[in-house]
Structure formats: structure tokens, C-alpha cells
Image 1: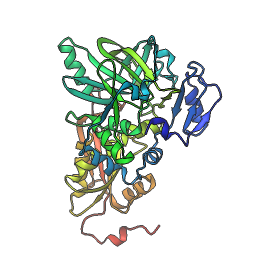
Image 2: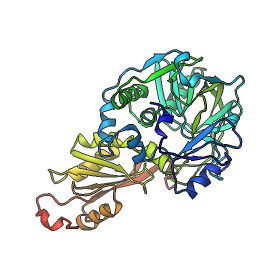
Image 3: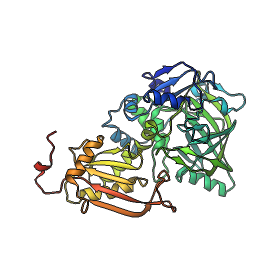
Image 4: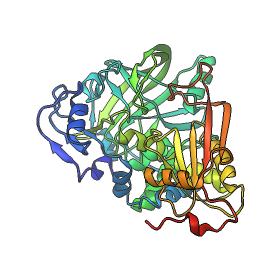
Length: 423
């Protein structure tokens, strides 16, 4: 299935709207409705979609029950498969190619007034270098008609680029907007070792749609999803330029940094294309970043205690905080779960552990568990001088942070009857 196939429930907005703050203003006024804009002032012939991939909408779109998505993603991580390659003539993303590269003709939005300018926040980068392929999210500032400035956080792609620069080389890439959501989920995953995320996407595609994930080889040799709305190919150069400010997932404004420049050599798109215009800091952003972390955390916790479920909290921006539901069989299981969760997602700042009877998606019930089952002096762990997240504006100057874990489970071996809610 293609990105556009999941937009059947979207509202259609035919009134003229500007790339400059227009989609953000409409989203806020509509209560963040999933919307396709068909009349964009600056980009006739192009459409744009917002608010597609909230947690419930994503699960409905790809046919996973919310309770089952963690295990489905976890299964895919351990069962990669090989995508199928098709010819350019068979690839919808190659239906229209710009004669001369002009990124400014694409509906790349300027959402927040605080942003540096027009940003592509939902476009993934596919890079191949020295036989290794990496697929990941990195926001891209539209600098001019054929250049983007990309924020590379310290993960695999940045390592790839820095190693290539040491050898005087540039890294060939594709920038892809509007692939199927399973590709977006795979791209948002993070692994300690080099794993080709497209093989994870291929497994999800086969399981959910009963068909192979199809790729097409672009003119620079990079393979991209054949049914994506837009594909751009080029290279990450040795040049750096200013990137930021940018409203990030926390809703705060990220810093200005010197970041690598991408030179785009070619642009192609589907007929009547739809640009995925994700709004930073909103629910869709938090879903794409946080949802793929849940299976990683669950797998880490399952190494020490049975983990029933993981929820990345909205107040934690889908990134910095999580609630774990465990099946407690030993007195120290809550504390062991906290330690394992932090190891499973090193950017996390707060972890709360609860029993099986608590709805971890309901912040009221989680707080209730804390108030009735947690004692601050014995059920709390505080860790100092820990690796922090660059998304946390309260981090220390050296980038470190402190972290806290709450064991809000019932003490082991006591009569549980007095701890159970009748409501």
C-alpha cells in the first residue's frame, strides 16, 4: 500500500492555503484533524497532508490493534526480509521528474514562526556507504533551490558521514517523502548495531499487506520505496551551514548549529503528489519518534522481568518519559525494570513502573498507582551524570542529565486486596 492509500478518512481542504504557517493554523483551528490540502498557494499541482500518523490513526491505517503494535514491531526487528527491486517504469515515484531541480517548487512548509524557514520534518534519508545502508529521520531545512541543511544527531548516519569526510568522500543519499507508514516506522527505529531498516519495513509490509515492499534504484544508485510520493537524490557534501532554530518535539525551540549540507541532483514525484507535512511538536511527531522506541524498551525489560506493555507518555513528548506495565514475581522486579528501561532507551529521563491492573495510557490511573503504591524514600531511584537527550533544554552544559525512576508497584508478598481499586 502507498502513503495516499491511508488517507481515506482525511478531511479535504480546497480553500487556498499558504505554506507559510497556513497548515499549522488550520490544524490548530480544526482540533488537529487529519487533513489533505489541495490548493496550496505557492505550489499549484501539489497537495499536502497533516496529522495522519497519530497512534490510533496509525494503528488503524496499517491494521494493528494498539495493544498489539509493540509485539508486531518487536517481531519485525528479529525477522528482517529482503525488499523487491522494480524498474523505474514500474515505480510510481518516478512518474514525474523535474527538468531542473527546484526544491522551492515543492510544498515544504514553514509551520512555526519560530522556525528558521521551510522544513521537511517527515522526509526520511536513505544512505548507502561502504556496503552499509541506513534509513533514518533527520529534519532538513530548505536553504535554496537545490540544497538542504540536515540536522544529524549522533547516530549511525552522522557516524557514516564523519567517517566519509575523514577519507575526503561524500555520501550518496535519497531524501524520501510520503512512503508507506511501515517504512516510516522502520526508519524511526534505533539499533546499537548497523541494521538495514528497509529489511524491517519489508517484513512489516509482508505481514500487514501480504505483498513485498518494492524499491526502485535511483540515478545515484540509492534504492528508495517505489510507491513514495516524492524522491530526491543527491549527496551529503563536506560543507556545513547554519541549521535551526526549529520547534522540536518538546515544543521548545532548538539551537542554531553548523550542520551538513545536502546537494540535491534530481527530484521525482508521483502524479498529483501528496507531501507529508508533519507539524513538529504535535501528536504525529511524537508518535513517529516514540512509538518505535516502545518495543526496544520492552525487549530490554523482558531480559530481567516480564514486561506486559510500554507507553511513551504525551507529557514526556513521546520521547523522554515512559510507563511500564510488568508482571511482578520478585521483590526487586520494579527496580530491575527501571534500570533495564533506561538501558533500552538512553534518551529517556523518567520511568514509572506499575502493576498489570493499571491502564498505562491513562495518566490519572498512573498517578493513582503512585499515590497508593509508591513510597518516595524506598521506591525511587535517582541517577546522576547520565547521557541525556539533546531535545531536553534542561540538560547540563556537558550534555548530561539526571534521571529518575518510580516503582509504583505493590510491595511483593503483601495482601494485595487493600491496594486494588473498586472503581
